[in-house]
Image 1 (spheres, rainbow, N blue to C red):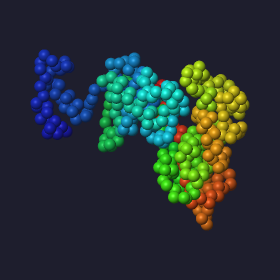
Image 2 (image 1 turned 180 degrees about the vertical axis):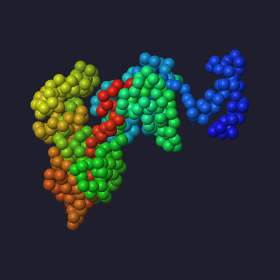
Image 3 (image 1 turned 30 degrees about the vertical axis):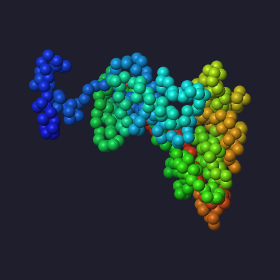
Image 4 (image 1 turned 60 degrees about the vertical axis):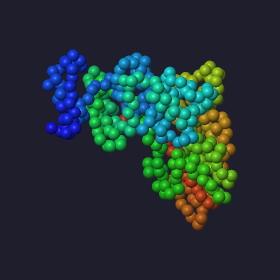
Amino acid sequence: AKADRGTRNWLCRFRIPSDSRPFPFRRASFLPLLCLYKIGVMSRIIDFLVVGAGYSGLNALAAIKRLRPNASVLCVDRHLRPGGGWNDFYDFVRLHQPHPMFGVSGHKWNLKDPNELAPRDKVLEHFQSFVDENIPATFEFRGKTNYVSTSGGDLSTAVDSSATKTVTLQSLDTKDQYQVEARHVLVSRGINYEGHGTVQTDKKADGSTSKVEISVNDLPSVCAKKSEGKKRAFVIIGGGKTGTDSAVYLHDNKGEKDEVYLVTGQPKVFFVRETVAGSYPNSWTLPSITDNLWYIIKDYEGDNAPEVIKNLRKSGILHSLGDDETAVTFNWGVLGQDEKSKVESVCSEIIQNDYVQGYALQKGEHIVQLSSGNKLQLDHDEVFLVNCRSALHMKEESPFLRDVPPIR
């Protein structure tokens, strides 16, 4: 009854030769099924539905390709193109280690230098070429598609792996929801990155900085604007990998009169790139980042972080800005010796273990209030607070926070 006139006309014209019917149904009983398929009430069952098309999701496709090359697979992602969170990262982000140690398993990079730390556009190119060139005809990538729910419970709960799942998806273009039947659902959303923390979510900020804050994604365009002799100050909020990347970028691109300040929050320690990655071919003889993480896990007993960090410093595996020995926060970041030197040289001041709380313009002077009670008093013509707050805002549905198998 819900079929439109075009669908009815299409059904009237449909004929199945008696010697080539693909299903053991009589024609009279098969036509209602065709009608339901046409209007979206039912669809074929696929073998695997992969949620997420970033590093995790595309490697899941690569694994299925090797083990089940004839399987029917649908991979969905909220972004238009493959790459997951890499579609949202800032333009000047680079891999932490040489590109051969990252990417889709078995898929070659279009880069000649094995030591290159691939930038964002090359990482996205690598992911896109895998989807364009290396997946079977029975595999499909569907962008601008959001996962909504799975029958039998949300993906944060265990689902019977032997039963076919009904998965509800949503087109982000039309906002329409539809259902897909799948034998297995693979949760491959990683940290489910949607952006860095904001002043609105920062519990230490009073909200007054919003008028002068810029996103790290906007730093290149702001930095590129002609300052016309103005004296500008860039205050970087956050001393993790994004913050240090921003300081390195400003070192290479800032104006002659521009000054840079870095407010780190909790002081961080980083892997020393030369120790954990090195240069090809020597890099293949060094312990990997995973090996070094094992050393940390093996020695850490729950209450001895300073001791573990101190020992790793002595062995040349970890270091921190200004060689601050109080730094014990470790978020798996990698920082080369050259990058560390650039950060320390470009910053007029590196303020450790403090947080940006507020901002005010008083009698022509820019005041950046810190949570410790200290202030940055800046007499610059323009001040930009660069938001580099933590990007590790994992939601409850993140696979990393669930004690259930990722494959249903």
